[in-house]
Amino acid sequence: MFVLLWLLFGAIVGWMASVIMKTDHKMGLFANIIFGLIGSALGMWILDIVGLGNVNTFTFAGLLVSVGGAIIVIIVIRALTKK
Image 1: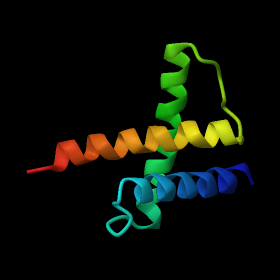
Image 2: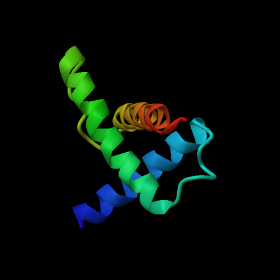
Image 3: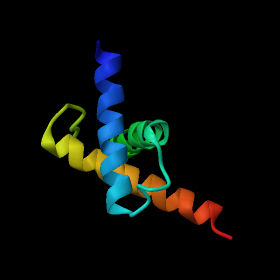
Image 4: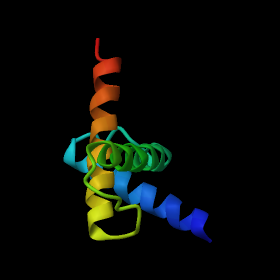
């Protein structure tokens, strides 16, 4: 059951990040899930390094951190794939 929640959370986070970065038309559901999950992990890792606490829960703060991480992932992918 938790796997389905994480997939849904990843899809929502990835979709929100892709809308903010205006890449929504290029990404599908699978890419949104992958970017959302990787972005969530990255955002939590950055917060842990900076020492701002652990928001490793399904909260609004966790959503914001996850979307921020997904935006960073999209920026990095854009930089690596730009010609």
